[in-house]
Length: 257
Length: 147
Image (cartoon, rainbow over all chains, first blue to last red; front, side):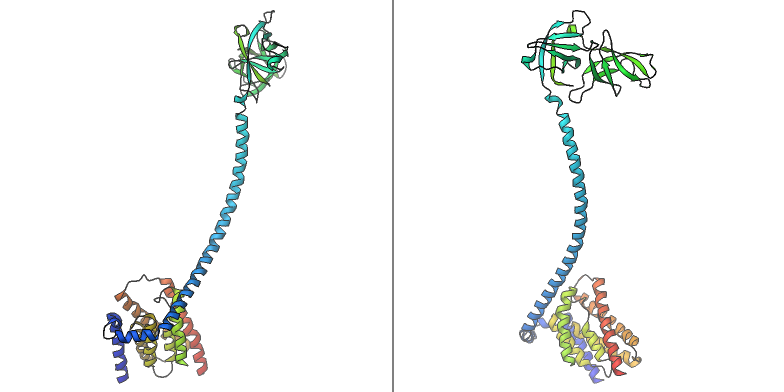
Protein backbone atom coordinates (compact mmCIF):
# COMPACT_ATOMS: atom_id res chain seq x y z
CA UNK A 1 0.00 0.00 0.00
CA UNK A 2 2.82 2.35 0.95
CA UNK A 3 4.60 1.50 -2.30
CA UNK A 4 1.50 2.33 -4.30
CA UNK A 5 1.08 5.63 -2.49
CA UNK A 6 4.71 6.46 -3.22
CA UNK A 7 4.28 5.77 -6.93
CA UNK A 8 1.02 7.66 -6.97
CA UNK A 9 2.93 10.58 -5.51
CA UNK A 10 5.57 10.09 -8.25
CA UNK A 11 2.78 10.09 -10.81
CA UNK A 12 1.42 13.40 -9.51
CA UNK A 13 4.93 14.81 -9.41
CA UNK A 14 5.53 13.75 -13.03
CA UNK A 15 2.28 15.39 -14.14
CA UNK A 16 3.26 18.60 -12.34
CA UNK A 17 6.76 18.39 -13.80
CA UNK A 18 5.34 18.20 -17.30
CA UNK A 19 2.64 20.82 -16.88
CA UNK A 20 4.82 23.32 -14.99
CA UNK A 21 7.96 22.55 -17.00
CA UNK A 22 9.97 21.89 -13.82
CA UNK A 23 13.23 21.17 -15.68
CA UNK A 24 13.57 24.91 -16.43
CA UNK A 25 13.14 25.97 -12.78
CA UNK A 26 16.29 27.67 -11.34
CA UNK A 27 16.43 25.27 -8.43
CA UNK A 28 16.46 22.22 -10.69
CA UNK A 29 18.36 23.63 -13.64
CA UNK A 30 21.88 22.61 -12.36
CA UNK A 31 20.59 19.07 -12.01
CA UNK A 32 19.04 19.16 -15.50
CA UNK A 33 22.21 20.60 -17.05
CA UNK A 34 24.29 17.88 -15.36
CA UNK A 35 22.07 15.17 -16.85
CA UNK A 36 22.22 16.90 -20.23
CA UNK A 37 26.03 17.13 -20.17
CA UNK A 38 26.26 13.46 -19.20
CA UNK A 39 23.90 12.40 -21.95
CA UNK A 40 25.28 14.79 -24.58
CA UNK A 41 26.98 12.08 -26.73
CA UNK A 42 23.85 9.92 -26.56
CA UNK A 43 21.66 12.88 -27.50
CA UNK A 44 23.91 13.77 -30.43
CA UNK A 45 23.91 10.19 -31.65
CA UNK A 46 20.12 10.10 -31.26
CA UNK A 47 19.73 13.34 -33.24
CA UNK A 48 22.00 12.07 -36.01
CA UNK A 49 20.14 8.77 -36.21
CA UNK A 50 16.78 10.53 -36.34
CA UNK A 51 18.00 12.80 -39.13
CA UNK A 52 19.44 9.90 -41.13
CA UNK A 53 16.27 7.83 -40.79
CA UNK A 54 14.16 10.85 -41.72
CA UNK A 55 16.33 11.43 -44.81
CA UNK A 56 16.00 7.80 -45.79
CA UNK A 57 12.22 7.87 -45.41
CA UNK A 58 11.98 11.13 -47.35
CA UNK A 59 14.21 9.71 -50.11
CA UNK A 60 12.08 6.59 -50.31
CA UNK A 61 8.86 8.62 -50.50
CA UNK A 62 10.44 10.91 -53.09
CA UNK A 63 11.61 7.95 -55.20
CA UNK A 64 8.18 6.30 -55.09
CA UNK A 65 6.60 9.60 -56.06
CA UNK A 66 9.19 10.12 -58.81
CA UNK A 67 8.48 6.64 -60.17
CA UNK A 68 4.75 7.39 -60.33
CA UNK A 69 5.36 10.75 -61.97
CA UNK A 70 7.82 9.17 -64.39
CA UNK A 71 5.19 6.67 -65.51
CA UNK A 72 2.63 9.44 -65.95
CA UNK A 73 5.12 11.59 -67.88
CA UNK A 74 6.01 8.67 -70.15
CA UNK A 75 2.33 8.32 -71.04
CA UNK A 76 2.13 12.06 -71.71
CA UNK A 77 5.27 11.96 -73.87
CA UNK A 78 3.75 9.13 -75.93
CA UNK A 79 0.56 11.12 -76.46
CA UNK A 80 2.54 14.27 -77.31
CA UNK A 81 4.72 12.39 -79.82
CA UNK A 82 1.56 11.31 -81.60
CA UNK A 83 0.37 14.90 -81.55
CA UNK A 84 3.71 16.10 -82.92
CA UNK A 85 3.55 13.65 -85.84
CA UNK A 86 -0.02 14.84 -86.56
CA UNK A 87 1.13 18.47 -86.46
CA UNK A 88 4.07 17.66 -88.74
CA UNK A 89 1.57 16.25 -91.24
CA UNK A 90 -0.55 19.39 -90.94
CA UNK A 91 2.56 21.54 -91.37
CA UNK A 92 3.61 19.82 -94.58
CA UNK A 93 0.07 20.14 -95.94
CA UNK A 94 0.03 23.84 -95.04
CA UNK A 95 3.37 24.34 -96.75
CA UNK A 96 2.02 22.69 -99.89
CA UNK A 97 -1.06 24.91 -99.77
CA UNK A 98 1.11 27.95 -99.19
CA UNK A 99 3.16 27.00 -102.26
CA UNK A 100 0.01 26.78 -104.36
CA UNK A 101 -1.39 30.05 -102.99
CA UNK A 102 1.80 31.93 -103.58
CA UNK A 103 2.05 30.93 -107.22
CA UNK A 104 -0.58 33.39 -108.47
CA UNK A 105 1.15 36.64 -107.59
CA UNK A 106 4.37 35.39 -109.16
CA UNK A 107 2.81 35.11 -112.65
CA UNK A 108 4.90 37.30 -114.90
CA UNK A 109 3.28 39.24 -117.65
CA UNK A 110 4.09 41.45 -120.59
CA UNK A 111 2.03 44.42 -121.64
CA UNK A 112 1.44 44.31 -125.36
CA UNK A 113 -0.35 46.61 -127.75
CA UNK A 114 -2.85 45.36 -130.32
CA UNK A 115 -1.74 46.26 -133.82
CA UNK A 116 -4.17 44.39 -136.07
CA UNK A 117 -7.47 42.51 -136.04
CA UNK A 118 -9.04 39.74 -138.05
CA UNK A 119 -10.02 41.29 -141.45
CA UNK A 120 -12.92 38.86 -141.83
CA UNK A 121 -14.80 40.69 -139.07
CA UNK A 122 -15.21 37.50 -136.99
CA UNK A 123 -12.50 38.56 -134.50
CA UNK A 124 -10.86 35.14 -134.65
CA UNK A 125 -7.35 36.52 -134.10
CA UNK A 126 -5.43 39.69 -133.36
CA UNK A 127 -1.82 40.74 -133.74
CA UNK A 128 0.30 42.01 -130.83
CA UNK A 129 3.38 44.24 -131.04
CA UNK A 130 5.48 41.88 -128.89
CA UNK A 131 7.17 38.75 -130.16
CA UNK A 132 10.05 36.37 -129.70
CA UNK A 133 12.46 39.21 -128.84
CA UNK A 134 10.28 40.09 -125.91
CA UNK A 135 10.24 36.53 -124.62
CA UNK A 136 6.79 35.56 -125.84
CA UNK A 137 6.10 31.92 -126.59
CA UNK A 138 3.28 29.95 -128.13
CA UNK A 139 0.64 28.95 -125.63
CA UNK A 140 0.87 32.07 -123.43
CA UNK A 141 -2.45 33.29 -122.12
CA UNK A 142 -3.73 36.71 -123.13
CA UNK A 143 -6.09 38.64 -120.87
CA UNK A 144 -7.57 42.09 -120.40
CA UNK A 145 -8.25 42.95 -116.78
CA UNK A 146 -9.90 39.73 -115.49
CA UNK A 147 -11.27 38.65 -118.87
CA UNK A 148 -9.67 35.90 -120.91
CA UNK A 149 -9.07 36.99 -124.52
CA UNK A 150 -7.17 34.13 -126.11
CA UNK A 151 -3.94 32.21 -126.47
CA UNK A 152 -0.78 33.13 -128.37
CA UNK A 153 -0.64 30.64 -131.26
CA UNK A 154 2.09 32.04 -133.48
CA UNK A 155 5.13 34.04 -132.45
CA UNK A 156 7.21 36.06 -134.87
CA UNK A 157 10.33 38.11 -134.28
CA UNK A 158 8.64 41.25 -133.03
CA UNK A 159 4.95 40.40 -133.28
CA UNK A 160 2.69 37.53 -132.34
CA UNK A 161 -0.74 36.27 -133.25
CA UNK A 162 -3.41 35.54 -130.65
CA UNK A 163 -6.18 33.03 -131.24
CA UNK A 164 -9.18 34.70 -129.56
CA UNK A 165 -12.22 33.32 -127.68
CA UNK A 166 -14.24 33.91 -130.87
CA UNK A 167 -12.22 31.47 -132.95
CA UNK A 168 -13.55 27.98 -133.58
CA UNK A 169 -10.00 26.67 -133.39
CA UNK A 170 -9.64 27.64 -129.72
CA UNK A 171 -10.27 24.84 -127.26
CA UNK A 172 -9.62 25.44 -123.54
CA UNK A 173 -10.68 23.87 -120.28
CA UNK A 174 -13.42 25.86 -118.53
CA UNK A 175 -15.44 25.81 -115.31
CA UNK A 176 -19.16 26.61 -114.98
CA UNK A 177 -21.58 25.82 -112.16
CA UNK A 178 -18.85 23.98 -110.24
CA UNK A 179 -18.09 21.54 -113.09
CA UNK A 180 -15.40 21.37 -115.72
CA UNK A 181 -16.07 21.48 -119.46
CA UNK A 182 -14.32 22.13 -122.76
CA UNK A 183 -14.92 25.58 -124.19
CA UNK A 184 -14.76 25.91 -127.92
CA UNK A 185 -14.66 29.41 -129.38
CA UNK A 186 -17.02 30.54 -132.07
CA UNK A 187 -18.59 33.55 -133.69
CA UNK A 188 -20.93 35.02 -132.58
CA UNK A 189 -21.15 32.50 -129.68
CA UNK A 190 -18.79 29.93 -128.24
CA UNK A 191 -19.99 26.59 -126.90
CA UNK A 192 -19.37 24.23 -124.01
CA UNK A 193 -18.78 20.75 -125.38
CA UNK A 194 -20.22 17.50 -124.07
CA UNK A 195 -22.41 18.93 -121.33
CA UNK A 196 -24.52 16.07 -119.86
CA UNK A 197 -28.29 16.49 -119.84
CA UNK A 198 -28.51 16.29 -116.03
CA UNK A 199 -26.21 19.31 -115.54
CA UNK A 200 -28.23 22.33 -114.51
CA UNK A 201 -26.55 25.22 -116.32
CA UNK A 202 -28.66 28.32 -116.48
CA UNK A 203 -28.57 31.38 -118.65
CA UNK A 204 -26.29 34.02 -117.21
CA UNK A 205 -24.02 31.54 -115.40
CA UNK A 206 -20.42 32.68 -115.59
CA UNK A 207 -17.82 30.55 -117.37
CA UNK A 208 -14.22 30.72 -116.14
CA UNK A 209 -10.92 29.62 -117.60
CA UNK A 210 -9.75 26.56 -115.68
CA UNK A 211 -6.11 26.62 -114.67
CA UNK A 212 -4.27 25.65 -111.48
CA UNK A 213 -1.41 28.00 -112.27
CA UNK A 214 -3.38 31.13 -113.16
CA UNK A 215 -6.06 33.20 -111.44
CA UNK A 216 -9.62 32.34 -112.59
CA UNK A 217 -10.14 34.53 -115.67
CA UNK A 218 -13.65 35.03 -116.98
CA UNK A 219 -14.44 33.68 -120.46
CA UNK A 220 -18.06 34.76 -120.66
CA UNK A 221 -21.53 33.72 -119.56
CA UNK A 222 -24.02 31.06 -120.62
CA UNK A 223 -26.21 32.55 -123.33
CA UNK A 224 -28.57 29.66 -123.89
CA UNK A 225 -29.13 25.96 -123.22
CA UNK A 226 -30.66 23.88 -126.00
CA UNK A 227 -31.21 20.23 -126.82
CA UNK A 228 -28.37 19.07 -129.00
CA UNK A 229 -30.04 16.22 -130.85
CA UNK A 230 -27.53 13.84 -129.35
CA UNK A 231 -28.80 11.32 -126.83
CA UNK A 232 -26.89 12.32 -123.67
CA UNK A 233 -25.75 15.91 -124.17
CA UNK A 234 -27.18 19.37 -124.41
CA UNK A 235 -25.89 22.35 -126.37
CA UNK A 236 -24.71 25.24 -124.24
CA UNK A 237 -23.87 28.52 -125.96
CA UNK A 238 -21.51 30.97 -124.29
CA UNK A 239 -21.28 34.68 -124.99
CA UNK A 240 -17.61 35.68 -124.52
CA UNK A 241 -16.89 38.86 -122.52
CA UNK A 242 -13.76 39.75 -124.50
CA UNK A 243 -14.37 42.56 -126.94
CA UNK A 244 -11.31 42.44 -129.14
CA UNK A 245 -12.01 45.60 -131.01
CA UNK A 246 -12.30 47.77 -127.95
CA UNK A 247 -8.98 46.66 -126.55
CA UNK A 248 -5.78 48.56 -127.35
CA UNK A 249 -3.47 46.94 -124.79
CA UNK A 250 -3.52 43.40 -123.39
CA UNK A 251 -1.64 41.43 -120.76
CA UNK A 252 0.29 38.43 -121.99
CA UNK A 253 0.68 36.12 -119.01
CA UNK A 254 4.00 34.39 -119.43
CA UNK A 255 2.68 31.01 -118.56
CA UNK A 256 1.01 28.23 -120.48
CA UNK A 257 -2.24 26.61 -119.37
CA UNK B 1 18.33 -8.48 -19.51
CA UNK B 2 15.37 -6.16 -18.97
CA UNK B 3 17.55 -3.02 -18.78
CA UNK B 4 19.46 -4.05 -21.91
CA UNK B 5 16.16 -4.44 -23.71
CA UNK B 6 15.01 -1.15 -22.18
CA UNK B 7 18.06 0.68 -23.56
CA UNK B 8 17.45 -0.78 -27.02
CA UNK B 9 13.75 0.13 -26.93
CA UNK B 10 14.49 3.66 -25.67
CA UNK B 11 16.97 4.26 -28.47
CA UNK B 12 14.61 2.79 -31.05
CA UNK B 13 11.62 4.79 -29.85
CA UNK B 14 13.40 8.10 -29.38
CA UNK B 15 15.39 8.16 -32.63
CA UNK B 16 14.62 5.61 -35.34
CA UNK B 17 10.83 5.55 -34.98
CA UNK B 18 10.64 9.34 -34.62
CA UNK B 19 12.47 9.58 -37.97
CA UNK B 20 9.99 7.21 -39.59
CA UNK B 21 6.75 8.58 -38.10
CA UNK B 22 7.74 12.25 -38.21
CA UNK B 23 6.62 13.20 -34.67
CA UNK B 24 6.97 11.54 -31.27
CA UNK B 25 3.19 11.89 -30.86
CA UNK B 26 2.57 9.15 -33.45
CA UNK B 27 5.47 6.86 -32.57
CA UNK B 28 4.40 3.34 -31.50
CA UNK B 29 4.95 3.06 -27.74
CA UNK B 30 7.22 -0.01 -27.64
CA UNK B 31 8.24 0.90 -24.07
CA UNK B 32 4.65 0.48 -22.91
CA UNK B 33 4.47 -2.91 -24.62
CA UNK B 34 7.72 -3.97 -22.90
CA UNK B 35 6.50 -2.82 -19.46
CA UNK B 36 3.14 -4.48 -20.03
CA UNK B 37 4.70 -7.81 -21.01
CA UNK B 38 7.25 -7.68 -18.15
CA UNK B 39 4.41 -7.10 -15.64
CA UNK B 40 2.01 -9.60 -17.18
CA UNK B 41 3.22 -12.27 -14.82
CA UNK B 42 3.87 -11.68 -11.12
CA UNK B 43 3.57 -8.37 -9.27
CA UNK B 44 3.41 -5.09 -11.17
CA UNK B 45 6.86 -3.56 -11.35
CA UNK B 46 6.41 0.21 -10.81
CA UNK B 47 10.13 1.12 -10.52
CA UNK B 48 10.82 -0.24 -14.02
CA UNK B 49 7.90 1.74 -15.37
CA UNK B 50 9.01 4.96 -13.75
CA UNK B 51 12.69 4.55 -14.75
CA UNK B 52 11.78 3.65 -18.35
CA UNK B 53 9.37 6.59 -18.66
CA UNK B 54 11.81 8.98 -16.99
CA UNK B 55 14.70 7.97 -19.32
CA UNK B 56 12.47 8.34 -22.37
CA UNK B 57 11.43 11.77 -21.09
CA UNK B 58 15.07 12.74 -20.74
CA UNK B 59 15.80 11.60 -24.30
CA UNK B 60 12.77 13.40 -25.72
CA UNK B 61 13.03 16.42 -23.39
CA UNK B 62 9.46 15.94 -22.13
CA UNK B 63 10.05 15.60 -18.39
CA UNK B 64 7.04 13.89 -16.73
CA UNK B 65 5.05 13.10 -19.88
CA UNK B 66 6.03 9.47 -20.42
CA UNK B 67 6.83 8.81 -16.73
CA UNK B 68 3.33 9.74 -15.57
CA UNK B 69 1.78 7.88 -18.53
CA UNK B 70 3.65 4.67 -17.78
CA UNK B 71 2.79 4.85 -14.06
CA UNK B 72 -0.88 5.39 -14.91
CA UNK B 73 -0.80 2.44 -17.32
CA UNK B 74 0.74 0.22 -14.65
CA UNK B 75 -1.89 1.30 -12.09
CA UNK B 76 -4.65 0.40 -14.57
CA UNK B 77 -2.97 -2.87 -15.51
CA UNK B 78 -2.56 -3.81 -11.82
CA UNK B 79 -6.27 -3.17 -11.32
CA UNK B 80 -7.19 -5.32 -14.36
CA UNK B 81 -4.95 -8.12 -13.14
CA UNK B 82 -6.68 -8.11 -9.76
CA UNK B 83 -10.14 -8.34 -11.33
CA UNK B 84 -9.53 -10.63 -14.35
CA UNK B 85 -7.47 -13.67 -15.20
CA UNK B 86 -5.10 -13.01 -18.07
CA UNK B 87 -4.22 -16.51 -19.13
CA UNK B 88 -4.83 -16.54 -22.89
CA UNK B 89 -3.51 -14.54 -25.78
CA UNK B 90 -6.82 -12.78 -26.61
CA UNK B 91 -7.27 -11.70 -22.99
CA UNK B 92 -3.70 -10.38 -22.98
CA UNK B 93 -4.30 -8.40 -26.18
CA UNK B 94 -7.64 -7.04 -24.90
CA UNK B 95 -5.99 -5.99 -21.62
CA UNK B 96 -3.22 -4.24 -23.56
CA UNK B 97 -5.83 -2.60 -25.79
CA UNK B 98 -7.54 -1.08 -22.73
CA UNK B 99 -4.28 -0.05 -21.05
CA UNK B 100 -2.78 1.40 -24.23
CA UNK B 101 -5.93 3.31 -25.20
CA UNK B 102 -6.10 4.87 -21.74
CA UNK B 103 -2.40 5.68 -21.65
CA UNK B 104 -2.30 7.20 -25.15
CA UNK B 105 -5.47 9.21 -24.56
CA UNK B 106 -4.08 10.51 -21.29
CA UNK B 107 -0.76 11.51 -22.88
CA UNK B 108 -2.44 13.16 -25.87
CA UNK B 109 -4.73 15.13 -23.53
CA UNK B 110 -1.77 16.14 -21.41
CA UNK B 111 0.10 17.24 -24.51
CA UNK B 112 -2.88 19.18 -25.86
CA UNK B 113 -3.26 20.99 -22.52
CA UNK B 114 0.14 22.57 -23.18
CA UNK B 115 0.74 22.58 -26.96
CA UNK B 116 -1.10 22.33 -30.24
CA UNK B 117 -0.10 19.89 -32.96
CA UNK B 118 -2.42 18.62 -35.72
CA UNK B 119 -3.38 15.02 -35.04
CA UNK B 120 -3.04 12.75 -38.04
CA UNK B 121 -5.19 9.65 -37.58
CA UNK B 122 -3.40 7.45 -40.12
CA UNK B 123 0.13 7.49 -38.58
CA UNK B 124 -1.49 7.32 -35.12
CA UNK B 125 -3.41 4.16 -36.07
CA UNK B 126 -0.38 2.62 -37.82
CA UNK B 127 1.68 3.22 -34.66
CA UNK B 128 -1.02 1.64 -32.50
CA UNK B 129 -1.24 -1.44 -34.73
CA UNK B 130 2.54 -1.83 -34.61
CA UNK B 131 2.32 -1.86 -30.79
CA UNK B 132 -0.46 -4.43 -30.91
CA UNK B 133 1.57 -6.60 -33.28
CA UNK B 134 4.55 -6.44 -30.89
CA UNK B 135 2.36 -7.42 -27.92
CA UNK B 136 0.72 -10.20 -29.92
CA UNK B 137 4.04 -11.66 -31.08
CA UNK B 138 5.93 -11.46 -27.79
CA UNK B 139 2.81 -12.26 -25.71
CA UNK B 140 2.40 -15.47 -27.72
CA UNK B 141 6.00 -16.37 -26.96
CA UNK B 142 5.56 -15.52 -23.28
CA UNK B 143 2.47 -17.72 -22.90
CA UNK B 144 4.14 -20.55 -24.86
CA UNK B 145 7.19 -20.47 -22.56
CA UNK B 146 4.93 -20.74 -19.51
CA UNK B 147 3.15 -23.81 -20.78
